[in-house]
Image (cartoon, rainbow, N blue to C red; front, side):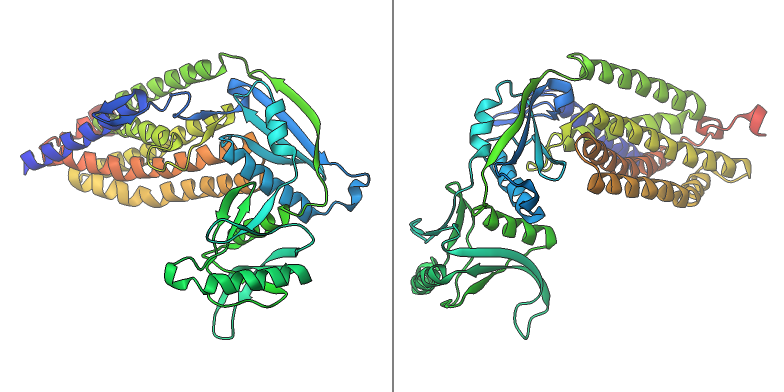
Length: 437
């Protein structure tokens, strides 16, 4: 039994060491190459306040701004986001500035003129057949508009989110002809019509029957956000205005060129002091907590760099760093609550094994409650905040979720392994004979 516990303990330590190494250094085996999380191109993305970049503010190029609707502004935001992503500016942030302004912050770009040319033109929306031939464009000549709807698609279906596309007379005729041709190609698996924006296909809905109506339905596995995005995408091809840049400037790192390194050094010093405190006060459980903290830091940095989810990379700002550090504090706080409960159980005369089990069980509710309230705050900040506030919310949310995993699950597992291979002296678990007798 002791050998089994020792092997389990060592395997976890090795796994943590591997994750930590991958997080800190470039890792390469054969043709497999994993960049460090600090790699400037493939690691954690840095925000405007850390590396500088460009700020662009667009406004509708119309005489009367009061006639611009919120829906039209939403369409403009969608098209700008799509163009930024297509150009590789995934780390750019978009937010509203007033009622009719769209503010774009693009890190690591010194000359914003090229971005303005790429973003500012009116979107070109096209409907293509399976051979990528243009059926019709998204102009007002053919399309009346699109809107997202929640409800039944047919008499027998339940309520779902879908997009209703409305045609004008010429558009109806064009679409009827296109769907006739699409249905005839079912055997070739080419019975679809693609929707392309600026020459890039965004979606390819399947055509199951000829559509001769002034509207059609686009269905998919949509939630409300997904249906709104599709509707805005279609509407963006027929914006009644072009965009003009009302503000255009390049900025350096707003917090100074050494802000990131200075912040990381401060965080490292704080983490070392916390780890020493846990080791001195709680001894063996403190050492286990320190190991879990190393695992926490490695996992959080790997997640932020897109190691586990390649389509998800966090743009790190100084508030984002603060969110990570705050969640580290929450992780240590959870360990303190648990270890103090374990000491209470030891004082009552229970064995070390029973005290550890009871300590985790009785402290779990308090730990979960405190973390859930922080998660709620992070979610609220994300949905109602803008810019760096959202960055803080994202890193705080990730940190809290991972800290609960490491502070409770990993720490408990490692402590049980130490008990399993015979370390049962109460003094090693933080109990002082003089003070706690």
